[in-house]
Image (cartoon, rainbow, N blue to C red; front, side, top):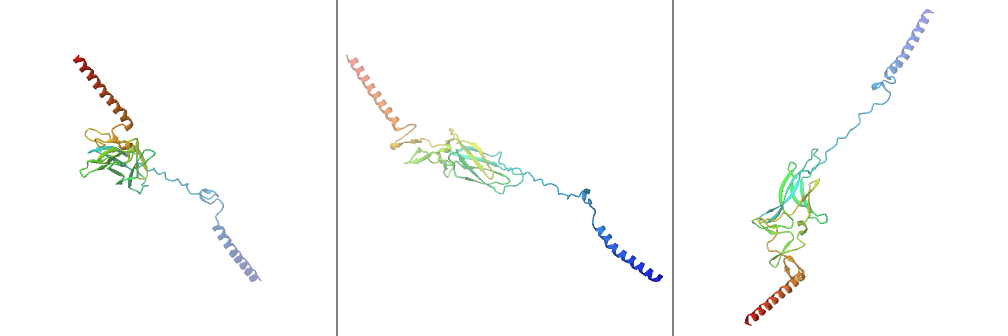
Length: 236
């Protein structure tokens, strides 16, 4: 009888051990509430993202200026690209002259090297010969062997214009047609203004020339009359 009780006790103890082991393991594998980072039940959020602020590319410091060389108008230019964040892949530069109403087609200047480009291009409407001397000028054309003024051939560029230098970005800079000097003419010598009616006079029109001609004739006639009166007085 004693042996039977001992066996039953041993079996009961073994059963309790088997039942308690999974419970302890389960309890050990489940972290208690509030066991996360910082001791809080709230989920941990990552640091907020702050985007980098890029500096916009600029052509500040670039310029274009009109210059007369060997009787021809030229445009000297200098481009400086500032792009610290290397956002610009383009290197081709162009120049456009505009007065706000009319604009030239883009004039190729070349490619920037290390963000810089300098050079010289002919003014629109100008031309040079083999020696580099000017043989054509904006606002003038050769008609029947004579240079005459015209509203065509980029004549408007001799007025108030702006030069737009473009790479991507662009910049607008003031520019003026080069002034003529005794050593460098920016227009053909002896050019006349073309007028209607087939006449060409300098600085006037055919309507204005007619009164001048009549006035000159009257002066000649008056002078002849005075001379005749003097001769008659002398004889008498």
